[in-house]
Each structure stands twice: as structure tokens, then as C-alpha cells.
Image (cartoon, rainbow, N blue to C red; front, top):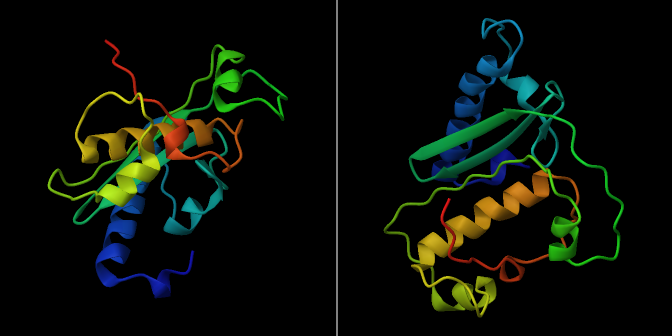
Length: 165
């Protein structure tokens, strides 16, 4: 990512998310959270993975004036090799995937109708546009962190259903 091309407000949010990550990582290290490290060690290897901390999975989010980082220690994931399966077939065939994804937006942010048409599934739970966006963004990050998917699926492929957790 070329940081020189970012708008100053977007750059500030980008740095806030890295600061949140830098403050969160020590809680997951074996030294009891006392290890110090540089921001350079926060270089991404792949989606949700850091070069310097391969034992961790991460998810970052930022919006104007706010940012957050979610971190978890990796555990073994079920290995799968299902190249030609649909998104849902892949998930059904892998029963114990552990992953994470987060997103946040200001509640007042407007998601225009054209965007909603691109991201909405016809059977989505009826919720507000910004809630729909945030849930799908978090789910997308969660799925991408599994490393089971390439980036060829769309938010529209994710159906939001009514669930009690």
C-alpha cells in the first residue's frame, strides 16, 4: 500500500489501526506481554497474517477518528483442498475453522443505494444499510483469514440470516 497516496484523514485512521494492533499483540505473546517491537514488525505477509508474528491472526478496521484491532493465536485449521466448490460448500466441508473478522463504521455513514444493490443478497436479514455493510465486511475478513478462499467472491454472496448467538 502506498501511504503517500492516502488522504491525510485516511492515513490517520490507517495509523490508528496499526497502533491498536501494536498495543494488542503483546497480550498474545508468550513473554506475558512484556516484549517490545517496532512498527516495522507489523508488516503484512498475507490477509490477516503478519511476517513477524506467524502464530497470530489479525483483523483491523478503521473509520474516521477511530480504529480497532482483533488478534487471536492460531490453532490448527482443517486442511482442505476444494478448488471448485462454492463458498457455502467450502464452509460446510470444514467444521472447526477458527478465525476472526471485525469492522466498524460511524452509524451516521450513508451507504448509497447503488452500493446496497451490489452487496445485498435477496434473502438478507432486514437491517439498516450500515449494519449490513459492517456485518458483511467482518464476515468477509473472517472468511479471508481462513486462507480457504481467493478474493473472487462478493459481499452479495454472503447471506445474512436471523440467528441467536
